[in-house]
Amino acid sequence: MPSLKSHVVSFILRHSRKKAFSSPENLQRWIAYARKTEDYHPPALLKARLGIAETSVDGFPVYEIAPKADERRRILYMHGGAFVFQITSYHWVLIAEMAERLGFGVTVPIYPIAPEHNFHDMFGMVGDVYRRMLEETDAGDIIFMGDSAGGNMAVVLTMMAAEKGLPSPSRHVLISPGLDMSLSNPEVFEAERNDPWLGIAGGLEAIRLYSAGIDRSDWRISPLYGDLAVLPKTLLLTGSHDMLSPDNLIFAKRARAAGVEVDVVYEEGMFHVWPLIDMPEARRARDSIVDFLTREPTPARARAPRRTDAAYATRHASAAE
Image (cartoon, rainbow, N blue to C red; front, side, top):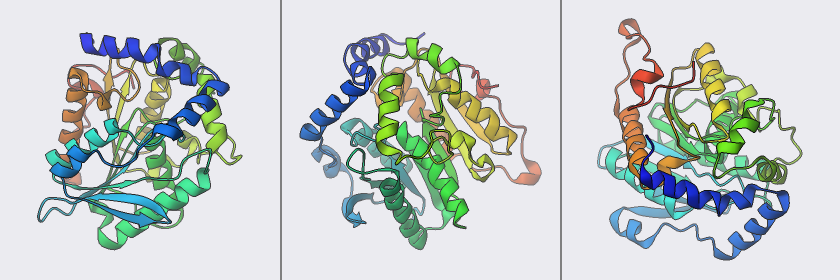
């Protein structure tokens, strides 16, 4: 049963953030307001706790959280925000917790966002960030993690890297990713009614602003239609009250059919990117991420049967199959 706090957060979202996605005009207004208030810098309290250095790639900031001594593994974290909103303190808190609990280095690109920039600018920059990481770190020690639009970017970036002959990261952690912008799945329209945050009209406007005219069914915008076989072992977190969840579950099924090992945490009653919010369900989700990233891979010749989602999710069975 969803916690009391999750109900409160859901109520607040429905009567605030949901408005941003209710129409193209509302999204444009929210973007204009956000540009006056957004601050991408890590909060001062986190900078005091962690070793954080700022570098630059293609003229945009990149933050590097130093790993623990002798730890080689690194996370490339791509934040959500519908490709039009900047990183927030909620993202930074999750990033800091992952850095502290895992001891991994974390690279956080403040990538160019729409409408000031577009798809080509975004992926040009994050692609250069990944290439720089590969010069310093073996791909087997790199993890892509992203929420919402950032989850989309993680999958697309891996597909683009494969197309260019670059190695794939070792694992993906995808939190409520947007993987199909084509709206070809009628279940998405049903799910929108239960979603306290996202809306189709505003979401389509965000896609229009960043997609640089690329068709919404193109794999670069909707990676569900790309070559899923190039993806690494993946943890996918999705909630039953997230408009994107039906397509997330289709992605998990298709990726498995393509030979990708996918673990799914499907949380009943949870809304979009709930692991970013401080509440009991988020703490369980973060524990699942840490477990996934610290679990040693099973040798191929002695690999145990793949676990079902029901076995993996902390308390909830997955509807992915």
